[in-house]
Image 1 (tube, rainbow, N blue to C red):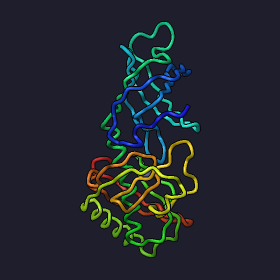
Image 2 (cartoon, rainbow, N blue to C red):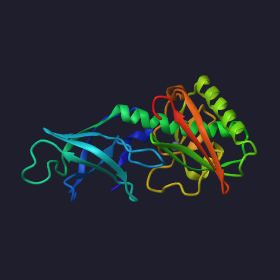
Image 3 (cartoon, rainbow, N blue to C red):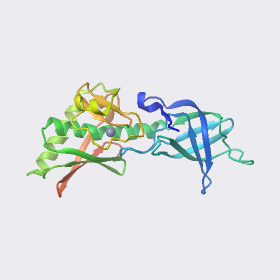
Length: 250
Ligand SMILES: [Zn+2]
């Protein structure tokens, strides 16, 4: 059963109540908990999963991994604390309380949004690159484009770095819109043809102008990202890889 994804409408929801729809005990002793709704972000789109707790009565499960399956069901995996005798510590049908680790979410959100700011800078500079994949992890943050290698890589690197600084300094008002994939082209420079069918189609509009088809969590204002630098650009075999770093994170 598809899980209702509370973070899609509102990135600020970090606490919620939910009902357990299924519990499985995994080989490693962790529980795999499915819920009717969740505010936990599952790994996807280059953004890492949330961690946090799911509480059922006096049992607290420390959630250390969250995944979305092809049916749109979110799996919350974690080790239960408290009494464990007599079957799974959390039972199907139970009402539970969810709490997402706010610091980790904020860090992942800022890193992820930073990737879109790089993309906005690339568009503003008129670089003829088509966005590809990205990774927004503390140990690895980059966005990739298909396109030719620029003649002067370091000059392009410097120009992107200046542009992202001016975008962040100007600030923004970002908002969420749900709309069919066929209509995304009106707001987004590029709409990938592999938009996952297992969650509602959504774009996030940066500053009411720059739309990104994306299911991740985003900052409301680009100023929340902080200082963003471009340490490296590598171009080979028609792929340009722009690595970026957010001050205080990576
Ligand atoms: Zn994104």
